[in-house]
Structures are given as structure tokens and as C-alpha cells.
Length: 125
Length: 125
Length: 125
Length: 125
Image (cartoon, rainbow over all chains, first blue to last red; front, side):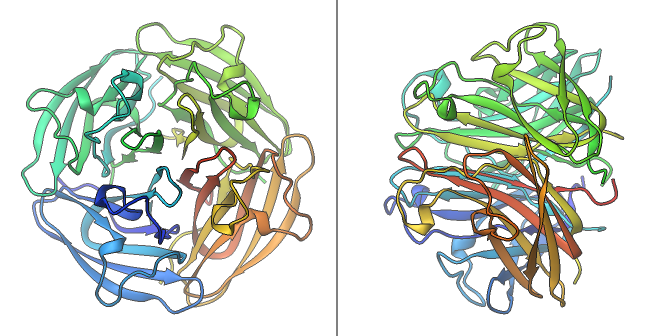
């Protein structure tokens, strides 16, 4: 089964520098939830765009066949970690069709707020 | 009236294992809100994808003609319940066109957070 | 300027029966935010679908030329008010192209939670 | 790399007039997150639509080449500031393809609520 698109865009990005506590579940984070429903591994390359500097990347990510990866931007490290409290945007390219959804958990203030939206499928435009 | 698509994808899925209290209204849950505007019942098959194991399903679901079903993933049981605090993704296939929206209510922390997005209509891609 | 589509679907609908207080700004509500960028008034017909009864409607709504209407489902009255704490879905048809976004403010628990997503543009599918 | 569309619509708009405190990070705000992945600057023109008055604009905005701009509607000033606690909608036109995501942070009540959705790409409809 092959479903999805090869290029996805998430214009909103900002990892809050503060969190409720140290529990990983409640750490403020930005996530790209990726589904690879193919029978082969998908190789992804992520570029990050900023407000006031050149783009950084590509970040290489593999999503195995028939698996989902809920990728925390917090965990990206190579070629550089994602700065906190900084606006960014991301473009995700895959060699196989995938589907990408964007979620943020913000626990700066002593509560938890969530946002989510499907990423924008840019292929063919 | 026939509106919608036959294949929908929700890459984000995670049912929090904790809740505010036992009130079903405030139980942490993941929902696929499905509209079947057709004059015939729609037969759906849901596959769940995980980070580290093979897909599970299909889960068989019927949405009657001219009805909406706000399906809680919490309630899926056959072939297996959905594990809590575990990342997953879902692919929903229907024999008739339907429309699917994804919502999570997260009441782990002593407040309530909501997220929602239209699922991704994968048909024809 | 003509932008948008003539048919929009919002599968998720549920007006919480409780609210934080009586302040209209914090009353739990479901909203369809509609933009009519045309130079003529748009006539809309809204049908509501439920889990266990026949659809109700059409509700007739006018969005004036070059105006936005943030329509609270709470305020729909003819042919019948929208029941609270009840799952529903909506199909919005317009004689002119419009754009529709769905938002809920949930203030049942003593905090405020928000969700929003673009409605699904069903025209041509 | 050219990705995106030239016309985007956000039907939902309302800048809460109250905030948690004076910290800019927690000021209630509406944001249009814009990615310009082109190698040239993009010139944008934003029109605002209201419930009971004629549209206001265009607001001229530049997004530099290979940059993202997380534009707060709160900061728009010319030709007029955006009224608070007032429903509006926006149409964003760009001379180059861009991608737009809508986010609101609402901190009126003593907590923080978030919503986000991809804007509606209206080009070609």
C-alpha cells in the first residue's frame, strides 16, 4: 500500500524553552508524526528555516517500513540542535510517499496546551 | 448525496494512560469523527501502525447511512485493544466516501487540552 | 474576487453543556468561521447529522458580501436548537464559494481549551 | 526550490483583548506562520474582512528569501491596527509561492490555550 506525498511543509515551529517539569511526557515539544505505510523503509531529509539566518540541514531520518515515527524536533542533533524559543519552519522530503502531522505540546505555563494540524502536502504544486 | 473520500490517514495517535477523573466526558481519549452522508451504511476497516511492531487490524466499523460516528480509539477491542501511552498512526478505509476529523482530549495534567485536525484524504495519490 | 468552495464538511461537533461562567466570551461553543470574499451575499444551508437520529435542517444562513461570519452553532434555532453534550457533524453548502474553519472553545473544566481546523472542502469529490 | 501557493485564507481571526500578563511570550496573539522557501523575497498583501464593516488593507509584508516569518496580527499597523476582541478573517496573497499556517495563543483566562491549522490554499479554485 502506498499512500501519501513526498514533500510536506510545517510553517509553524517553536520549541518552548520551559516546561512544567522534567517528565518527558510533559516536556514542551514539537513533533512531526510520520506514517510510512510502504513495504520499504523511507529516507527523509528535513530542512529547517529561520527568521534571521540561513536554513540548516538536511537532517537525515529513516522511517522503517510499515511503521510510524513521532519525531520530536527536540531530539534533532545533526548537523545542529534546534534552538529553543526560536521561530522556525520545516520542509520534510521523503523518497517514498508518507503522511505528516504536526503537534506541539506547550507546558511553559503551569498547564498543558496542545495544537495539531496536518502538514501541507506540497508535492505537485 | 455523496461527499468525501474512501481513504483517510491520521499519523498522530497516542491515548494518554492517565485522566483527570473517571468521568467519561473527561477521560483522555483519541477520536476519529466520521461522517457518512450517504444513503447506505459505510463499512470501514482501520489499520493501526506502531513505532516498533507490525501493524494491527483491520478493525471493522460500520457507520450507518446519514449518521456520524465519533469513534473513540479507546473503545477498539477486536483484534486487540489499543495500548495506552504508545505512539501509533491509523489508516481508515471505507467502501463509501466519508469525511474524517481527528480529535484528542488530553486530561493527564489537572486540566484539559484539546487538539483537532482534518485527517489526510489519501485517495487518488 | 472569488475564492473558496461551495461545500464544506465538519465531522466533529459537540457543544459542551457546561461552561466556566456566564460570560459569553467563555461560554463553551462550536463555531464555523465563514469568509465570503465575493461582492454578493452568500446563501448557506447547513445540515446537521447525528449518531442516532435522522439529519436536521437545513438551517438558512446569509453571509453578506465582503464579510466574515463566525457562526456559533449554539445560536442555531430554526428548525431546531442544537442539543448540548451530543455528537453531531455538519455539512455547509453555499451558493457562492466561501471558506470555512471550525473552532471549539471548551470551558467545562475550570480552564479553557481550544481546537481548530479548516473544514473539509468536499466540492468536486 | 519553489513550494506552496500564492493565495491563502484564514477565516478564523480574533485577538483576545486580555492576556495572562505582560510577557510577550504569553500575550494573547494571532499568528500567520509563513514559509518562503524561494531564493527571492516574497511580497505579500493581506486583506482583513470583518463582520460588520468593509475590508481593511492591503497590509504589505515582505518575507525574505529562504526565511520564515511568524507574523503576529497584533503587530499590523498600516493602514490600521487590528481591533481586539473583534471577529475577522484574512486573505493573504503573495507574488511567490509560500505556505501559511494559522496559530492563536489565548491567555485570557489564567491558563494558556492554543489552536492551529494550515491556512486554506485558495489558488486555482
